[in-house]
Image 1 (spheres, rainbow, N blue to C red):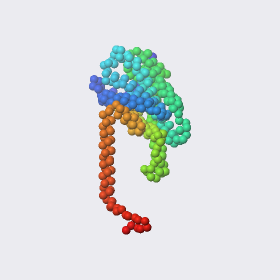
Image 2 (cartoon, rainbow, N blue to C red):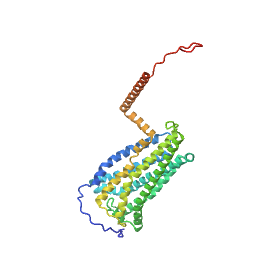
Image 3 (tube, rainbow, N blue to C red):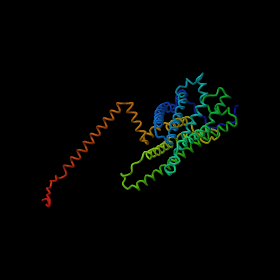
Image 4 (cartoon, rainbow, N blue to C red):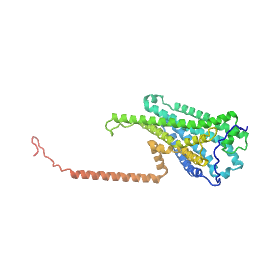
Length: 390
C-alpha cells in the first residue's frame, strides 16, 4: 500500500555534496566504535563472570547481571550498522543486501528492547537502593532474589511491548515493497497502512518522550540518593565524635554501601552520556514532518547524530570502570585473576610490596633511634627496705 498522505517540509535546498568523500560523522563512528566494542565486551564479560561466581547472591546480583547482559546486546547489535558504514560495497547488492534488509527489523527491535531493559532496570535498582537506605529494617525483611527476578521479567515484557512497533512496521513494509532500501525510514512509512502509520509517528515521538522521562527519573533518583547518603554520613559523624573511631562495618553493610555507590555512579554516567542523544532526537523530530518546526543542515545533524550514538554506546560500555571504582570486592577478584593469569605481574607486585615493607621498617627504626637519642638516660635507683633512694 503506497501512502500518499505523508507531507514534506519546505526547507531550503541544501547544496550538493561530494558523496564519495566521507564526512566527519564517518570518522567519529569508524574510529570510536571498535574501542567501545572492545571495552564493552571485556568489561561486561568480567562483570558477568564475577557476579556469576559470587557465592553470596542477593537481589542486587539479579539487577547487575541483567544490566551487563543487555549492555552487551546493545553494543554488539550496533556492529551491524558499523559494518555497513565501513564496508558499503559488501552491502550494495546481492545476497548480503537481501540478508541485511531481512535482519534489520529484528536488529532494531532487539537493540531498542535491550536499551529500555537496561534503562528501566537502572531505575528499579535505584528505587530499591533508595528504599533500602531510608528503611533498612523493612527492606531486609522484604528482600528476596525471587522478587527481583519477577520485577526483571516485568521490565523485559514491558520493553518488548514498547519496541514491538519496530518489528511489525518494518516487516509489513518489507512485505509490500520487496525493493525497500535498507534503513530508509521514509520509504518504510510510505508502505504502511493508516493505522500503522499513526503507530509509526506515535512511536517516534514516544522514543523522545521515554528518553526524557528516563533521564528525569534517573537524575531525580540520583539526587535523592546523594541527599540521603549525605545525611547518613552526617549523622554518623555526629554519633561518633572521634572521626577515626568509627565501628568496623560488617560484610553486609559493605555490600550495601558498594551497591549504593554503584547505582549513584551508573545514574551519573547515564545523565551525562544521554544528554547529547536526547538532544539529537529532539532535533530530528523537530525537523521532520509533521512538525517542521526547526531547521538544521543535514551535515550538522549527521555529525551530532554520530557523536550522540557514540555517547549512547559509552553509557552501556563503561560499567567496568564504575565497578572498579565503587566495589572493593570486585577489584580484589580482578587482582586475583591477574595474579593467576600473569605470574610476572604477581612477582613484581610481591617484590614491590616487600620493598615497601622494608622501607617502612627502616623509616620506623630511624624514627625510634632519633627518639631514643633525645631522651635523657635514667640511672637505676637502689632501693632497700625502709630506705629512700639517695
